[in-house]
Length: 496
Image (cartoon, rainbow, N blue to C red; front, side, top):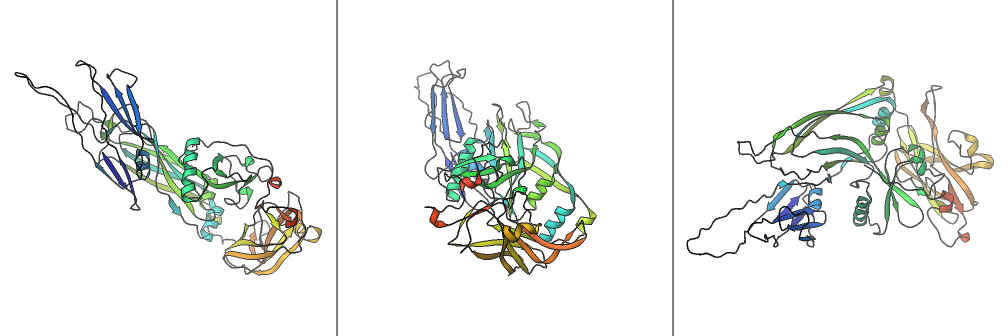
């Protein structure tokens, strides 16, 4: 039997298997049973000498041929077209004698009368491009609540669970189990050049990601630790360097159970439809709220990706019949409650430091790019500052941290345009320091202070402290200093 699946991009996934071993009953009075199972390892063949046996007399697994996949690979490719080329042969032996008759019969169940174990499929990710700044600002400043409502009709003979996942990365692990995280690591080794010895784990408590207490670098995913959200699974890569890195988050926007079909055809039906096929679909309506944390993630800077996660439940050894008429219909709408004052207000302009955002060690014989993004209008020039204060209460709004003995100018009157900006910071002559922070301030007053109702300057501070070192004191240069960051964090698994 040959399976060929073609996905939306035209890529082909193939799977085929040929069974040349079947069971024969030990006596004329017995009936043997051969079970052929397609699973994540390939094709498993089990032979039972009698249908009442609980232990097979023969059990083997045939791995996929080179260039082919398993049933899991085939279904996970989300094929838009699935072609099955099947053939069966009955091979028997006997003796023809005078006066005897020849008769027999067989029943071939193929290919889609099935008994299913639990399976999880991920579809292709859909990109949500970065929102325009004004739209983002208005949603964040005016949204009171949001609710999504789904009308679901399930005309498939299986129970299932549908989730919609959100991430800042186009690569999603299927689940948070150790086995699936290893599979995700292997995928990233192929797609992103990771080492096959890298480790992947998940943390969902912000206390374990704090730059004060952990050696985990977070600033590829968030610009400041204050953006961390408790309860959201953060995927972390460990490559043996001593400093692990948050590479993405995976949040569940919503999840609901598909309604079971109201009725399946049985052997007693006389309409000619196969037993186990859907006779009456199931219907249900679900409502789920979107809290402010999830709205903030969707409206955050950069592109985002959503992906349906489809979990098929086990049929508990019951045979079902899949047909071309099986389908799933999901209709949805979203309702927003907004503040009229926020939705009609003008969007404030904003400065966001991109790098260096914290944890790095900089060296006095090199130059480094300070990067920031400018959002909105009215900002044409900025001033860049540094501070050597180790006060954990340091703020971008209190000028005393950024002048005198505690700090000073990096550069003044630097041109700034909408989008990404860069300034090259030459550290020649800069003294060694253990706690450097960077601040950016607009020359113009472009932000309306709601307390005073007056316009003030836009400001931002980088996420965490930097170190400055003389390269003559170290034999190697590392991008992040482990001792500076803190002790290693404990690890958790993500239970989707």
